[in-house]
Structure formats: C-alpha cells, structure tokens
Image 1 (tube, rainbow, N blue to C red):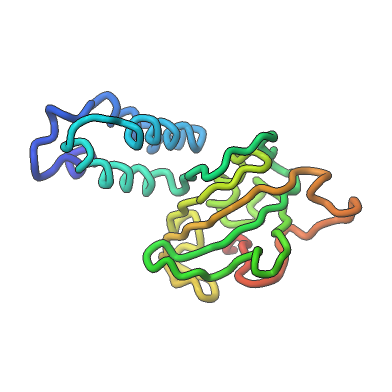
Image 2 (cartoon, helix red, strand yellow):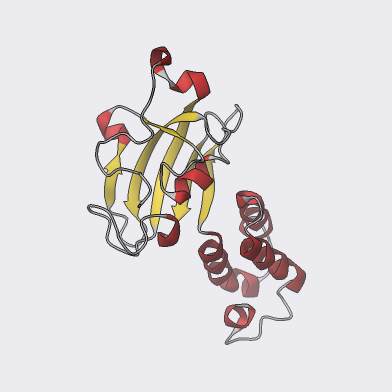
Length: 198
C-alpha cells in the first residue's frame, strides 16, 4: 500500500513517513473508528505544506477510507453524548451513491427519522460504526464503502458493490428516541431499508 501511494514522482522528501505509517497502521488495525479520521483531518485537511503533499492527499485519503470502511465528516458538532451499543437511536438521513451522487432514500422526505437499535447489526455496518461515534445533535456525512454497506448483493436502487454517502443527523438517544416508551422495531420498513444484509 505504501508503495502504491508514493509511486510515480518522488514525494519521499516531502512526505512524513511516520505520519503515513501511523495513518495506515491505525486504519489496518481499525482502532476506534474515527481516531485515524480525525488525525487525517487535522494533519492533511488543515496542513499548510507545499504542493507535493497536496497532490498525494487524495490517494492517501482514498486508501485510508477503503481500509477503514466508514469515515465521517462532521458538518455540525453535537453537544450531547454518544450512544451505547444496544440503545435505541433516532436519526434523520439522506443516502446517495458515492460515484454518481444519485439520492436513493431520505427520511427527511418522509418527515420521520429512522428509529433503530445501535451496535447490534440491525442496520448496515457503516451505520453501526459511524453513528456510534456521533454525538447527540451532530450532523455528519458518513462515507461508507460497499463492504460496510450492502456489499455484493446491493439493495433496491443500490447496485452491488456501491460505495455510499449518508448525510446523518442524530436527533435522539435512549428513552428520548422511543415515543411514549413504546417498543421499537430494530428496522423500520420504508424506503430503502438500512437493515443489515443477512
């Protein structure tokens, strides 16, 4: 992987090998999901170095995204806590295909957020891992590779092997996510279900 990132022009003088190794090592080990993504953001997206590193940035980020399976870009910081595995959460979302940008589903169009149990496999892996790192009130874009989405099977308008993007807002956690304390199915049936592929 390292060789493929630096192939072509010689960027070795300008690239911090310790930084690159830390990023790829963390991604390969799948450390707590967004530790590496936040490190990437701070190290690359805000760096002020010369043009050589900027030219490498898309290839490095793409390689890390593919290794991690899911990353998130925070659009609006949340002020609440993160959900625990097994808790009911409520989230508004809009899903689209990464390659074409074509929208395939939106809870916002229905005016009703999706309610599900986080961390138990009731939704695609990209959601379980991505939303578990979000704070209450946060709005983020989840970048989900096909392995963490619908894989080789696809689902409805989602072709097999499709990388996905979701604009997600975490609107409720725990008891606040369950209206009137009623029971909630782990996967509501409307639009393109986010249920995990069995």
